[in-house]
Amino acid sequence: MNVVITPAMLGQVVVSGILAGALYAMVALGLALIFGVMRVINIAHGPLLMLGAYTTFFLYQALGLNPYLSVPITMLVLFALGALLQRTLVFRVVDAPELSSLLLTFGISIALVNLAQLAFTSNLRAIEYATGSYTLGPLAFSKSRLIAFAVAAALTGLAFLFLQRTRLGKAIRATSQSREVAMVCGVDVRRIHLITFGVAAALAGAGGALVSVIVAIQPEMGQIWTFKSFLVIVLGGAGNYPGALLGGILLGLVEQIASLFLTTQLSEAVAYILLVVILLVRPTGLLGGRQT
Amino acid sequence: MRPRTAFRVGLVLLVAALAAYPAVGTGYGVRAMLQIFMWVALAASWNLISGLTGYVSFGHVAFFGAGAYTGAILITSAGWSWPAAALAGGLGACVVALVIGYPCLRLKGPYFAIAMLGLNEVLRALVSYFEGLTGGGNGISLPTLEATVPVYYAMGVAAAAVTLLAYLVITSRFGLRLMTIREDEVAAEAMGIDTARHKLYAFLLSAAGPGIVGALAARDQGYIEPISVFPLATTITMIVMVLFGGKGTVWGPVLGAVVLFVSQELVWARFPYLHQLLFGSIIVAVVLLMPRGVLGLLQQKYHLPRTI
Image (cartoon, rainbow over all chains, first blue to last red; front, top):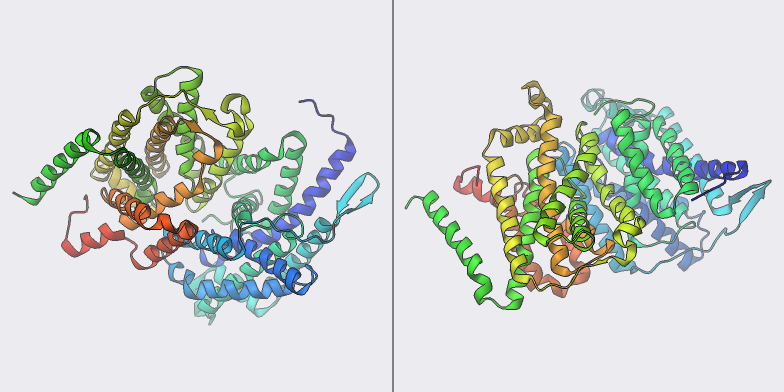
């Protein structure tokens, strides 16, 4: 294969990578929050994103609601669902060995995908909105990806403001640093767990809403997002929330650059090889993070 | 007769009966038993890494697929006999396990589980991509050969071998060290156990069985393609079988494989759309209500030995 790479192509790849990266970062931040606060890897994170995409789709189909306006509604729905999952199932394994929480969320993930297949069928669905792209010189910006980037960046920014500035956000970070000390300081840890899971599910839901305009919606669209979100966390360093931003952008760039040389079929494999190499060379992530 | 002697006599009788079965059984019966053997080998293999060390492998079907492709390629392109190709399939799976296990098992925590979550998809993509070797999406057709009964015996030997391996591991110092890692990895390290090495050995042992079984299944079916040998559902089934029967035990995976396979054939085949929902619910229910599985409950209630 002989590919000539022009500067314009390279610029395009960098732009596309950054656009995709913001979305990765936002979704991964949800997974990172749950992991940081509860030491639980939520295998059902991707399927929650899938449910977010369906929520947006049905709001669009039934009520004709603009998919971007439905982002807050989707987030609320997913917040409630996440809190419900935490309240009924996940809270029982927060202190259990890792095996239990991994298996439990794996079971939830399988069940959610199957429920979606039963309720929504496996037909591919799409939201035709914001098609086409803007051009700027030699670069093309797909409309839906550009808006997704802007919304994801804004939501991620809001999430960081929430974590940094509000009392609740501080309580979440405190719980993530040391649950016992947070408890001693009067933080209601169970409530924090509930809210954290809800916020994480809402971030996944927002991701689903944004993705629903870009790719086809189907029950199995979510699983790959669990893997990619985790990859973003590993890249950025586990327990390091700003690291997730860098990790997201990096994953987006690597995937796009790989797509210059390889077929799309292999782009997943590239992300995977990246994970294995990072774990070999720098297991604490690129920015460094807390060892688990 | 002491219980232990009775158990051993029963076991010998069972093996004898299974060995004689193809002479008297129907075609369907032999095929069903062959499938049960396959699931016993798969479930018992998953148990070796995940049940003993607590490191969850979410992509164990990858080794089944790796074995199937190794075996099928050796049979069609190199003209190997299928028993030799099956052993090579086990070796192929071990090579994949080494490549993934070495970086991921050095670390504590969920890295391994997530890496295994992606492995299956990646192998499927790679197999589809390297068309020259694997036939890509068209798959590989193996030369026709009527070998159901020989494959039945081979599958039975594989199931017995993996179960025997589990018994040997669980009753050995090596097994005790693995279980120490599961209970408290830091303490295990403090006791001087080279945890990374032990986890890797357990992982290699757990990959060999699915590799062999995968190659045998490829021979049995006569045709493989990426979708048919890398289904996520197979990993899910292995996990459900082990959890239900009792993880970390010798006979739990066997019990789980038999019970789940039979109920699948008799009842659930009528509700194909609910299959995954049911399996997901079983996983959630077992983790929350019965973490040690059926055999674990029995061990507790009747004070059975830990090594059963």
